[in-house]
Length: 58
Image (cartoon, rainbow, N blue to C red):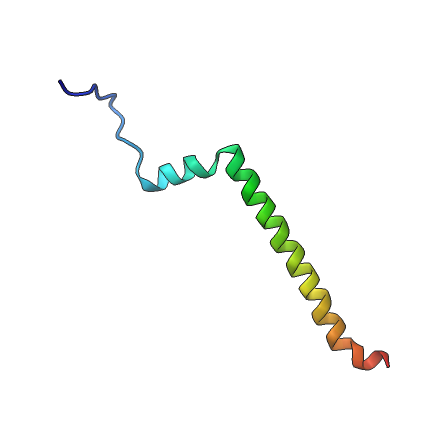
């Protein structure tokens, strides 16, 4: 006996990825990594600025 079809095709790879990524635990993981990356970029920017202006401070 064949399974019942409900007039909607099975989700493709992209739809399954979006459904999986939109789960709360995955969103929290993405937010944590985005925060850490932005913090690292901020620190790197300050280090670059300081290294560029440090000759003028002495």
